[in-house]
Length: 197
Image 1 (tube, rainbow, N blue to C red):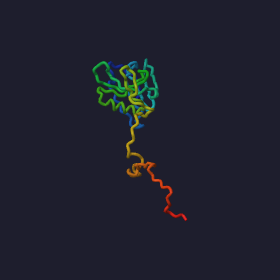
Image 2 (cartoon, rainbow, N blue to C red):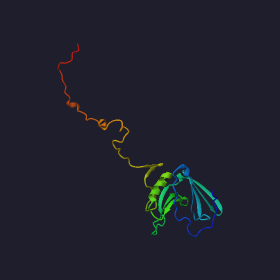
Image 3 (cartoon, rainbow, N blue to C red):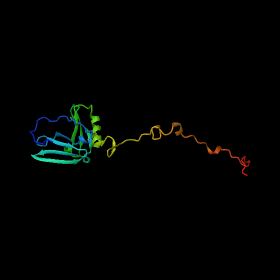
Image 4 (cartoon, one colour):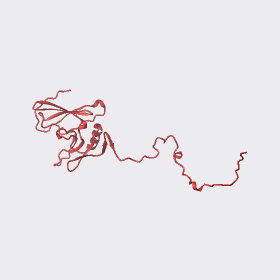
């Protein structure tokens, strides 16, 4: 791995758009990339994204800093506009922390074409909720979640797709209509046809 060295600060943003490839297997972790960090000496920080934690490295006043945070410390993944007041349609998917300086951009693009697919993909890969930003700036989960499981309204079972489908024919699985007990004939005082002697 290449050592992280300070460089001269650039006047323009170094990484205007971020497009990380999501890990598909356990061997694809960790993801190591650089992101913009204006307070740092060289204007960038190094990010190491692991399946369960995140490592941020940067230099401030020529002092190397390393911060390791568990992913549970992050609120989730939110979609943000790159230029909220302008006409630019650029969007970003941000790993949101309560401290905005610790938030990390995982995906950004000048268009909104693939943002929902990336948003869902990163949410599934990291096990964090998808966050929707309200007009007042608060964030709420797009879907209810319990841990890594998305909670939805229960659906009715479809008949014919259960475990017994291949064991018994459909006609035999149907129950016959019952007969009311009040219509049975009762015979009293009659002689039996069967001899028991």
